[in-house]
Amino acid sequence: MVTRRDFLKRVGGAAAATAVCTRSREVWARPDPPQRLNIIWIYSDDHAENAVSAYGSRLAEVAPTPNIDRIAREGMLFRNSFVTNSICGPCRAVVLTGLHSHLNGITRNGQRFDGEQQTFPKLLQDAGYQTALFGKWHLGSTPTGFDAWEVLPGQGHYYNPDFITPSGQETVEGYVTDIITDKALHWLENDRDETKPFMLMVQDKAPHREWEPGPDHLTLFDDVKIPEPDTLFDDYAGRGTAAREQDMTIAETMRMGPDLKVWDESEVGSFVWNRTYGRMNEEQRAAWDAAYDPKNEAFREANLEGDDLVRWKYQRYLKDYLRCIRSIDDNVGRVLDYLEKTGLDKNTVIFYSSDQSFYLGEHGWFDKRFIYEESLRTPLVVRWPGVIAPGSEIEQLVQNLDCAQTFLDIAGVPQPENMQGRSLAPLMRGEQPDDWRQSIYYHYYEGENAVHRVYKHYGVRTDRYKLVYFYTLDEWEFYDLKKDPNEMQSVYDDPAYASEVAALKTELARLRTHYQVPEEDP
Ligand code: SGN
Ligand code: CA
Image 1 (cartoon, rainbow, N blue to C red):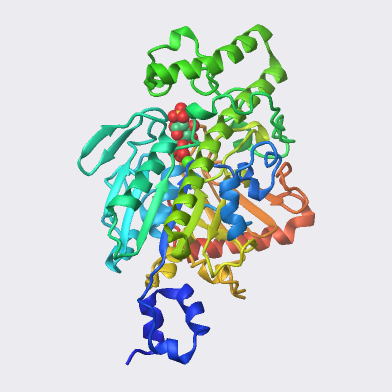
Image 2: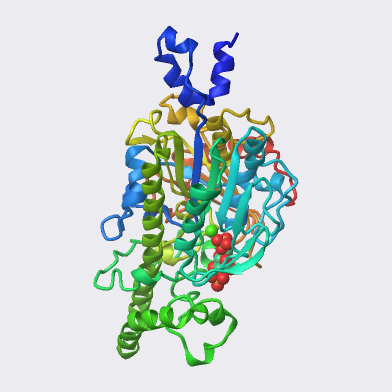
């Protein structure tokens, strides 16, 4: 006899549970053939929450993302979605393992992921799923736990990208965002085993630095003025050494050639030129030059200096960045259309997220790494037909640490005890767990000797407060996000906050014990 519990387990988790509850006894005795849910994870690189229009920001009107927004509109948007360590490799390792950096072995970029360890794709495979991954990987080792995979070497290329595949390396003509989606759709259409459910990861390179737009969007936003953030000319007076000494400003750090596309002749043939503009074929280069040459000419003639130059750089940076995102959004649309056309949309849970968020001129910066809001956050939207009420928003604090358990839960696969996150599926079903986490732990390990010179730090954030410890500097910062959402003034030494600071210190210590963070950095 099939018990109700066995049955639920067999048909795969929550969606089925909801459906079954409403069925009559008669149907109950003769269930449809088990339909397990498919999962699609679209994961871009450095896509700021402020550049997803569903989140609403100064950019929402000038640079909408209609297809990503469609996932939110037909599904759910997580208002308070955060990372554990705001940098690429570490975020990816957290998603795969459900473990903080110090336990999954990837505290910084450039380390080699131990593919022998437990990951959610492997657990899904063991449970009968087909798994596939296309696009950015950036974890050093060869992917494990995937039935099919084709990944970019390291950061990859925007134009005519190389791919590492199980049968060797190949170069594919075209634009990376389109090609990654082509590969994913090709796998869905031709190569997957239709008798099994699937989990597909579509991992874009874009909109990562050097923000090279695709051939179809080179002149997008040419006639638009991108709104500036209030903090573009931040002088860091209200914060500590780390904010003052970083190397990630639009004013100083951003490079005219590779980043802003105003190359100097001496750079032609350089390493960075070769991996960017230098990779284009004749046709691509002609389109690029036709778009950029007149704009660059006007810029040279204007002879800008000081704040005017920063403003120009900001416009060029943001336009290129948002052009890259337009291609991502187009390609999200292609995936959604494919699901609809094939009917797969009905039993596929689709996520859109980014490895981390990004500074779009806030505090004068680009890049990420800091625990401050713009890089601590990451966009997260999901559509789960029949389960998530369309247009839902979730305020609870969630983290990329929760992904692995969420995927397992959706698939009806048991969640290993040692994973450190929590399944988001109950939130998606509309439940209000009263024991949801009240704080998150963050830890950035690269330090001042790495690119962009951001000092090591760890900290805790609640719905209102943030406490940060820059431990190699022995400096603390504390922010009241309600009163100071842009984090312009640390109130660590303000006696009015003494009890809140003390409470967060206790909470930080509790989290470090709870997550088993070692005293010394691994
Ligand atoms: C490269 C970028 C940096 C970026 C890191 C990490 N420089 O080094 O700006 O912070 O990647 O990015 S670039 O000249 O190569 O563009 S991450 O997303 O992989 O963590
Ligand atoms: Ca990234």
